[in-house]
Image 1 (cartoon, helix red, strand yellow):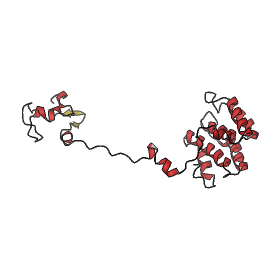
Image 2 (image 1 turned 90 degrees about the horizontal axis):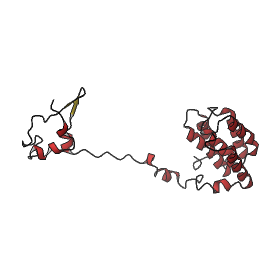
Image 3 (image 1 turned 120 degrees about the vertical axis):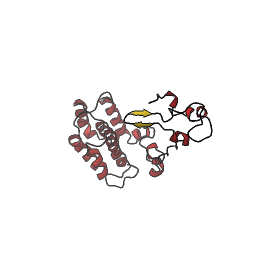
Length: 206
């Protein structure tokens, strides 16, 4: 989202404030707010305003991963004036101490204050923008073309067990092992469809 940001934060705001949206995506959209702000594509004052408003407007007002992205965005931007709100969020249990502790937020915040680019540089590329968004996404598994399923061999399709009202019917129950195979291959039944992977040898005659 940061890579295709066009100066309008509205779409980001909508996702972030949508309580029905995935909490992890909402969290990352908050970090995208910080990224575009650090790149000078969004006014810092507007980012700070929105992040302040989020304290009252984000749902749920309970433990949720979206709050992790919220505190992360505040730390990335070095918004020390919002530190009291983050402290309250920790105190109210919005941010689980199994994710991180308040001291971790304070360390990140101080690092961003001392060097605004430090957190980005230490993220191992986590906050790096895509060079070409379409090219990048084309390599993701979920965006790859669906691989067509292989066609079943003809003998498997011919010999499929028919299921009717929950009962398996063995269409070969009267065929002897040494009889010509009913599929018309010219081979004996035991050398052809009897040994097919469909497992007719394990069926009971009905």
